[in-house]
Every structure is written in structure tokens, then in C-alpha cells.
Length: 150
Image (cartoon, rainbow, N blue to C red):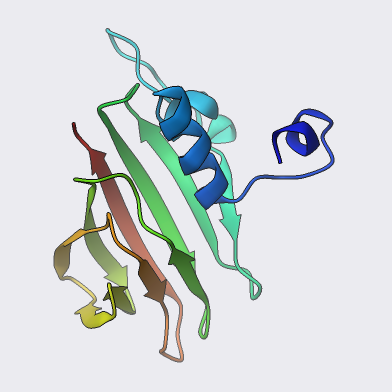
């Protein structure tokens, strides 16, 4: 996969980026260049990468993050009705914080499902298989913070 990425013949998935960053001891934010510096690091809107595109127009954008291996990332997700995202799980001790702005988020963590309605927040351990989904008839918008602390 690395060879295909280097040749610009493939775009890595979020899962592949997570595996590469863990192997290198850096954060995904380091790889896509939205990691913070010791002072203030401004990430302009045109430099915010979209790292997931759903089949119906949804997206996941990595807004900012700290440099790793101990890292924190801030994401903004938009999912259209019927879209979902699955992850095999992150390194041990990883957790995610969610806040739903619009719609209802279904989170499945290690086979257990939770519903997070608009205006509500949740915290989940995500070092196990997990999934985010929009089962509703309207658009889902949520922010997510990923913390991977060793």
C-alpha cells in the first residue's frame, strides 16, 4: 500500500493512515500536516483535509491535531442518510468524544450500539472495533475528538 501511495496510484483510507501513523510513532495530523507546533499553528480552511468521503456525499475532515505519539485530533463529520463508517479499532487506550450538532448518531462499539441525539455528547473507548452510522432520514453532523494517550 505504501508503494501505491508513494506512486500516487492510491489514496489511503483513514484506517490505513492510522496504522501508518502508529507504526511511525506520529499522529495522523502529522501525516496530513494539520498538527500543532509548540506555539500557535493556524490551519486555514483550504488546508483542512477531507479524509473520508461517503458514498452519498458525506465527509470526515481532520480539522486539527497535536503531534504524536500522544495525540489529540479534532474532526468534523457529515453523514447522509444510510451512510456508515467502520473501524477495526485504534491502539490501546484510545477514546473518542462526540458531540452531535444535527441528526442522530448511532455508535456501535465492540458490538454494543448507542444512539446520540442532536445536542447530546458521548465518550467511547475506540481501541476495539467500532462504527458510526446515520440511520435517519436527514443529514447527520457531529464533531469528534480522538485522544490517543500512552
